[in-house]
Image 1 (cartoon, rainbow, N blue to C red):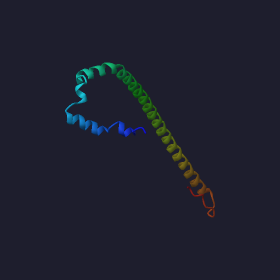
Image 2 (cartoon, rainbow, N blue to C red):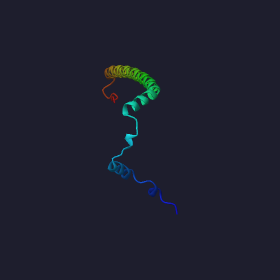
Image 3 (tube, helix red, strand yellow):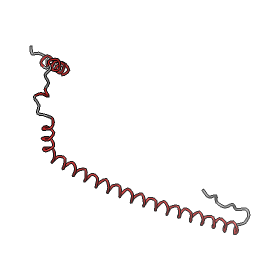
Length: 115
C-alpha cells in the first residue's frame, strides 16, 4: 500500500523549524538580494510599461465617462428647469381660466378644483 501524501511531504512548519534549528537556511544558497532585484526589474520593464499604458487607457476612458456624466447632468438640469417653467405657466393659465370662469358663471356652479 503506497504511503499517503502527508507521509511523503512533511508539513511546511516542521521543515522550517528543522532548518532554523540546524542553522541552515535556503537564503544562503540564493544570490544576494540586490542582484535579484536588478534582474527582476530588468525583466519586468516591459510589463511595467504595458501596465502603465493600460492605466493611461483606463484613465482616458474614465475621463470620457466622467465628461459624459457631466453632460447628462447638465441636460437633466435643463430639462428640470424647462419642466418647472411649463408647470408654472400651466398653473398660471389654470388660475386665469378659473378666475375668468368664476366671473362669467352664475353663483350655482362651482369651479373644478386644482390637484
